[in-house]
Length: 480
Image (tube, rainbow, N blue to C red; front, top):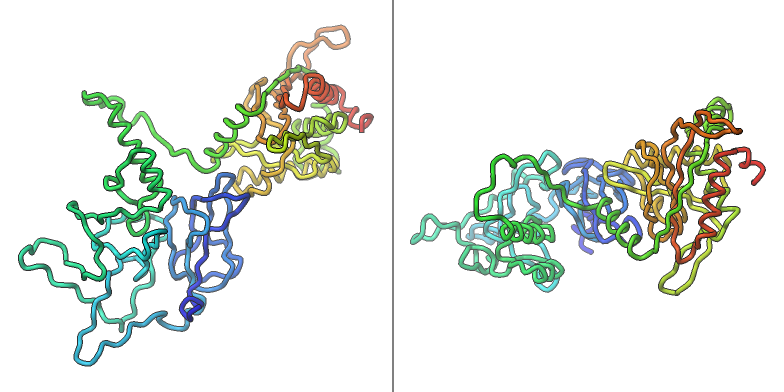
């Protein structure tokens, strides 16, 4: 490793959980010239599971931010470089020109704001030479991918003189640095990674017609998809001009990150696990009274106490009485995996989509401990700080549709889990109580389960036990 390589260290996009291949940069917290320390958070990225803050593992001064906010970056790609010895002066000073000879211009001039000499190195292409022309970039409010300006003593690069026969043409590049151009002035072979080329081939897209948006004129997957969508739109657009009345009445948002992963997971779950859903309506007046009492209990001071807490406790009691419901279907090995622990998932709606973090070993927690864990889980999810580890390994899930005023539903299983309980809205309704019709607090519970490993009897017992505990919460003690 050279001295320059030791001085300028690159921080690569890490795999932040379970083999993820890419992440989108949501926000930069640093810019070129900022001082960073080991462990300092430099950016926030969104994966297919959650938004995650990335700390940098070394000290120094930010030399270059490689990607703008909103860019999706493959795992393992350098996203920021740091000068770990900023007092050492210029990293790579140019050699002095020979006596009697003027200083030669670099093989390809760096675009203003770009790191000088950095070129994309694509698999199968070797070092890609710099292009003589680049698309102008729009200014962004976030940090720019600019390197520090050359020192005052650095010689200014000389520009080649234009060809006399065509004075209006762009400056002619040196033969050693200029890529081969086609008739349109673009490189004869557009810059794109092999997977992107395959995607373009599969979609029938000519890369020559795609406008690149990646660094150094590289065509990205998003560019190919945009071109394919434009072609499809052109095919479907009628010959007549569209009415101006519909302009501005629609908006399109790319499906990516958590929302994309959730959509795919729900489709996979719905079409791989045979769902069965059962319902029960129950009088929860006593449970609601217990919630009110617990809010005044000193042991629960400062904790989140609500009906969902007791629903979670009731489900844990039901699982303890019917442990076979807490299982997973292993398709590859054709086995049912029964679990002696409960990682209780709580479905949470966030601005980035539905996520299901889970409380590890919820079965072993006391009521105050469960309340504390539930409160932390909800707060973290709302702030968008849930980590992939907190969303992996769930066994059973609760979805609280009642907070939206919904009575019931048919929830889809979280992938890899055997059951999910929907908790509906608690409403004051007429109810037969002790032989008389009285207003009572009533709710509806719905339990969906994987019918490959949970039959109707077992699913019914679990749902009935949850309802029984909520109807008479003293069973939390007698059934413990």
